[in-house]
Length: 114
Image (cartoon, rainbow, N blue to C red; front, top):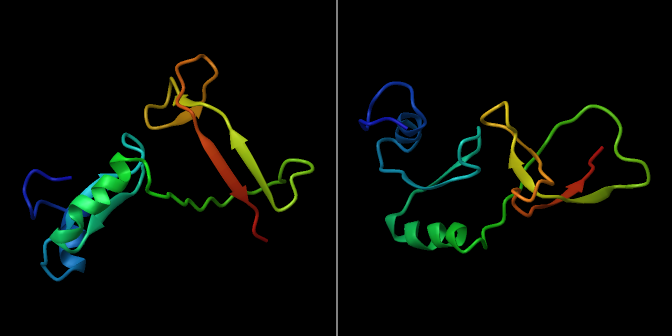
């Protein structure tokens, strides 16, 4: 995110261009310190409501992952991973399953599309 509104080829400058110069309001950065998604709203009147969903942990996040290989045996079309997530330790932007007691509780529902 740039210090100046029209600085270089930033996400903010691209959002400004996409909106034809209208002001985009950034309300949240999903998964901070990773290559996560930034959430913008177009209307100032929606900023507090959308931001509150993330603050209150009521926002629903849906991710699409493309993987090559085989799904876990016996999982069928879906499976759930319940494991604490923590810092990778080597790659700053990465996260990993962390059973040290330091990890954050996480639940991931995986659906397999063919």
